[in-house]
Amino acid sequence: MKWTGEKIGLALGGGGVRGLAHIGVLNVLEQEGIGVDLIVGTSAGALIGGAYASGMSIRNITAKVDGYLRSSEYKDSAIKAIGTTFSSERKNFFQKTQTFLRNRYYLVRALFSPSILPSEDFQSLINYLLPDIDIKDTRIPFMAVTTDLISGKQVVLTEGSLRKAVLASSSVPGAVEPTRIGEWLLADGGVTSLVPVNAARKAGADVVIAVMVDRELPKETDIETAKDVLYRAGEITANMLEAAELENADVVIRPSVGDLHWADFSRSDHLIRVGEEATRQSLEAINNSLPLLRRFERFARRFRTIGKTDHKPDIRQ
Figure 1 (tube, rainbow, N blue to C red):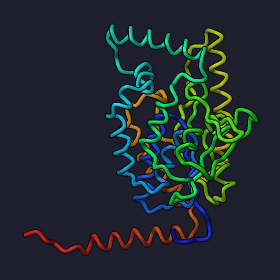
Figure 2 (tube, rainbow, N blue to C red; figure 1 turned 30 degrees about the horizontal axis):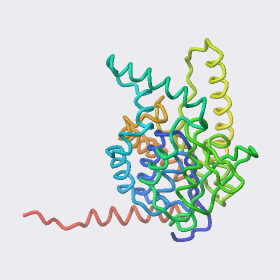
Figure 3 (cartoon, rainbow, N blue to C red; figure 1 turned 60 degrees about the horizontal axis):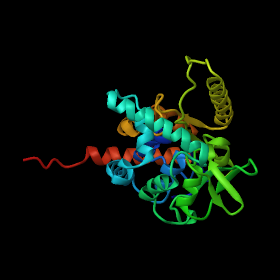
């Protein structure tokens, strides 16, 4: 990418399957000629951001996602089973019975193992989507945000296996087993930074475009049991931390991801579309945040494109 004096950083947030909206965001940025100099991702943001930073095209990433959802690895996985459990789609009596028994199985499993999901299930997803390369070899500088469960500190991975870094960043506490790297026991980066704006700043970004794909804090919710109170308190804490970090972003893109469960892949195409829509709605704010030379280059590129279209010869008979 041609140097323009200031670095543009993209901070892609976590949110499980809702992170597929990042594909739509990246697609519009690419179509509009808005290049980025570095990408920092948390959880799902690390997965999609890592794939794009590695050099994969948007079309290739989308095809990989579609291929995974049709694969036997996904159809036989606990990821699909959990997503089906929390899906909003209507279920018949047999499916409801399956869901009830499956929930009891996961509850028992959680009491005797560090995660609900078998580690190989999540690893197969990552291996399916990401090339086996070192982070230092990505075409766009890339960083994955994780949380060390031992020290309680944020760890930003900038080298080593791309697949292992993304696995660590995506290790949702309780759902996916933590990843051991050296002395660290790493879990989901969303524990310390759901949208890694500050990490992007520390990495050298002068302008940060943040993408938030987490569920909005529900206004109406039943709070009747101790579990409800604890869950709600956790949501409020995460929401406040996220809002504080987003204040440090130049532009915040908020795709309308709704209340979709993090493992529910039933609306993948919809998520990509809402990512595109939210980015197009943010184009003016993005353009205004760009350095002047970047704005001029973008304007010149669009002008040349329009000129080519206007002067295209008519080859119709």
